[in-house]
Image (cartoon, rainbow, N blue to C red; front, side, top):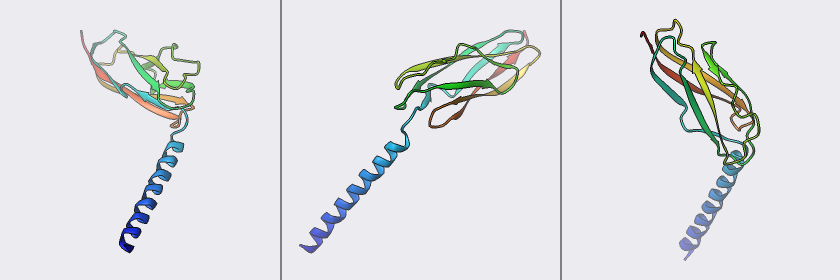
Length: 136
């Protein structure tokens, strides 16, 4: 009988500990959260002299509005279209931005970072573009 009571108390205590951990985890993720469809966009093979454009799509999977303050390329060869969302993106809302890679005089493989700054729980995020510039 004593063993049964002790086991019941142990299971009850363990259950309340789990509930406390879940409540803490829920508090930890409150705020805006950017979730990308893909964090790496592969341009594949592109011909030198062209201006290939690719799109990054994302969703605010958090519980607060998402505000993106800037999106910047790693270098001058990576350009972000000015059409990225400037208004707040509601929880569950989606957005996108376009990236262009300048292929002039750059034959060979590339792998460049795009840096996104926002009010999200992770305020600075990186996504990447990669590909291969080929001669005509």
